[in-house]
Length: 328
Length: 289
Image 1: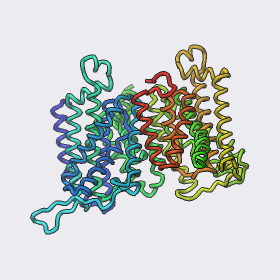
Image 2: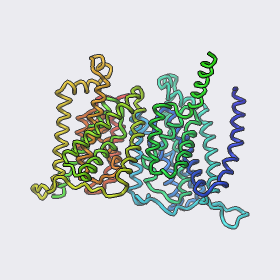
Image 3: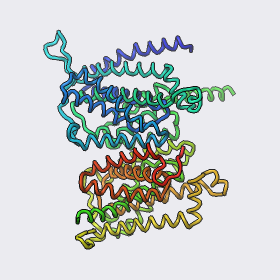
Image 4: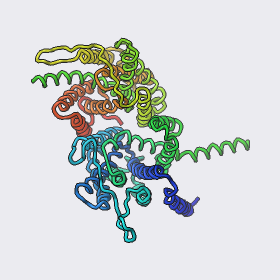
């Protein structure tokens, strides 16, 4: 398949999928609408996380960065009375700034030093939210966070984005734009350089690439989109507390990304969608959820190390071998 | 004055636990190059074993302690065989596998013991030691300190004076050179994993009567073990013990005079500082790739 027809395929898929996704919540009961909303937020999280993993680092701070966005937007709108439409992008920028600040200590490390370092930094930030009752609200967190509202000329009351359907549609737009931006970023010169920094670090340095700067860029950009997801999330839920961003939640991101696979852009998205849908089907076994996730993680590490994204290729290989065997 | 002395006594007991947690983690890391994220859950399994056998079935405490060590040791050996060995070439793979196991163990603990229920483990050795200056140490705590010191001494002796210990240290220094000397790297890895796990299980068993036994108790353990292992210089057992003592004093005093959350937060800051300024820690000699 050449690249032009491939691009056509993508546009066609988007043209079918997007209206379907936009129409879907109107046919779903309330709790399924909620499920779709969290699914979109998780998609944003894993795709932005993938940008960080592109530079070869596995971070454990991503969930806390989402929380940074949430806390920032909540504080800006609640305590500083900023318009919510402004506080959300501002919070995302602030999260990127926090990541930039953290990158000075963190990105001096590599491999599992980075992993442990990012875990420690994330936990320290989370404990700070827990410890300082002012302004973060302590262990109980913040409540009564102002919702997103839009005054439309033809409606008497402002359109409130606490309702699932309007929020879902808004989130769908934001997610699509974010995915598009992240996709473009990955396939730009920057993304290619990041690949090089990951797989050929010495070569990258040798040809004059400042790998530290590229790793910082990936880290901060990933943080921006995580913060955006967090800021949107907090105005939908109306409350935020430190436990929502504990290490357990971070591990779910890790599971989604690993099970989906990290080689392609679609891998993490496949991972999060498949596992979340499975999770929704087996809802009555909710208390077993972490164990099932753990088991799936162990099995996929053993038998599907390249993730779900490698499944079609593997099946094709099997099929070809069978055909070849049948032909003798 | 009494409070200071009492805090010193408490810190001493804590340093025994901290050392046991961290030494197990460091042993496993040193020999196999894998960070065992499920280390806290091993401690939890040890505590649950004591809760089930001693508080539930009425077995004598020393027997329950032994059972906990054995069960967690077995768990460690299974982990090594099925989770770590197939991923020899990929240390991150072993780490991710240990995260998967962590989830499973937590859910099993919830299923066995329930969530939020008080799991009361009565002290096996009631009574308190009355020391001068009105310092009181419950006998249970004193016993825990003595047992952990004994275990640490035994591990130190093993590593310094036995052929097995030399082989273990050789593998952690240079895997290939050790293999060339005829040391079975695989068997030594098994041994380190079993030993580290048994130490974690014993620590959990000793803690059971002293702390709240609950499915998520491993979280505090793994954070502390990370802080201690990094500050001590990851891979260095002596560094880990030294850092454990220092951190136990720091943590106990900050907790007594301010708050436990603040103590952990500052501990994490110190760990980050060490990672940035001197990644080899107090006693580590070199970095690993």
